[in-house]
Length: 108
Length: 122
Image (cartoon, rainbow over all chains, first blue to last red; front, side, top):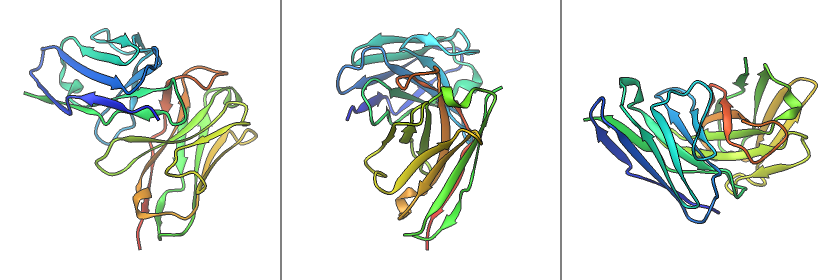
């Protein structure tokens, strides 16, 4: 089973600043990685797939990069609605489709 | 637009069974793989099961293998999760979800339902 490790667990950032979230896979997953955003009480929303492709209607301030085992989600200028939880997920080697434990982005 | 609407959650005693349903609309049902993903209170996302777009392959997390069964009814555009031998640690919000790309299993999850809460408690 591929283990996905996200860091940090909590990221404190000021509005308007850049946030950089990391996700590491225990073995290579090529570019088969997705990022999801989850707001309290809501279902997750797909942000990025294929490690770097923005999903439909996702703002350009969200970008993804990486391949193999190291991946990054960057939010270029944090808006108030971005202070929520983010998950990475691999879909290269399955089952299972594994998620990271999540990174909470909080307001500094 | 794509809609996934779960139902069937509730409070159930340990060892009992429950069947969740997910009514799908807004897309060609038999062209997409479908997942069940759960989230325990205050915890992260945990993938549970997938059924392929053709309905001929099923995959399960080790934690539910042998207890849960995923199925789909193309005539009703509905996904199911039969949960047997429920345990307190199965308590979670259960989401049904659809893959991003048609005709493949290896794809991200694009659409999610609103979730249905299952509480396993005596």
